[in-house]
Length: 441
Image (tube, rainbow, N blue to C red; front, side, top):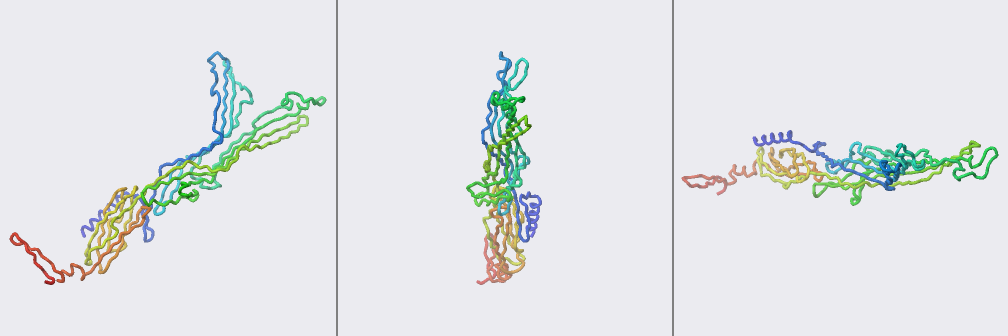
């Protein structure tokens, strides 16, 4: 009994001082050990390049004003069309039993951008005065679209009502303005008395308007194609089977978004007849690019470690025992996994007492459990030691126990009653003899 009390005391110290990784929760007559683990940070990125970004020109003033030439020229042209998005975050696996993988974004790490268009500068500089002037008013322009957005990643949730939208526009960019006479290089040969040439009365204005619109929605985390499964992120998690062999789970995933793009150029030709004070704007819409496509971001692999409980001896038969007496058995429990193992140990029969009732093992660790068989009544005894652990493959496992208790049929009772022989060893003058006591001769 003193030994039993000592084990109880040691068990209590282990429970209050040990670091329990999993959370042990009682649910009715059963127990559950909940656990979770974050993956390393993952990074998804996609660039949709329609026209590669190109920069051409002199860069700075060429030649420099330090030479003999008194004039420098700066000529730069940039054009392209591309857009993209990137995001960072971590995966979170929760279990027992089925492994549910959630996704959490790193705050403010979601970024989306677009750039579309053409810009040009053409300038000349007088090296003596430092004056800068355009080579031509038509060679200096900015016909570009640009927008940037920062968002919380993985919160798109596959929801078309919650997109990330980017847009920009060009408003009333003057392409050309002048009379019909300017356009044809002279008069039309038709004139109105006291008013003048008809072509000088008709005024043209060419304006350029445009817009670019990008909407990213319907995003999801998807599994590798070989697994032939993908779960939209608005289902909150991906359900993954834990590894049966091995204790590390690697999940190849990628990110997908449905993207709608629209680029439209509007050229407005305004004809104004001065003498009549009339204007006729004629808008001409030119769709440059429209698309509804799927962006598939770079594939990533997230990995998780799992504990794995191993018990070699799953059954024990105790020796026949007198009520009130006790027998005990020790057996080993191992964690052959790659993550801490936490388990609740429960006996379903009061004739069998197991210590300790909570275990916590590092990867590769082991511990010894002790089961005491102490019956208080006669008869056949059957019990089960139940292990509830954070092993996702085997969250519930058992060890079967058997024992028998009798006051008349045990080996000890038959010796007392003289039904079985008992031998006694006596030492005599450097020798020894065996005396038969009781039993049949």
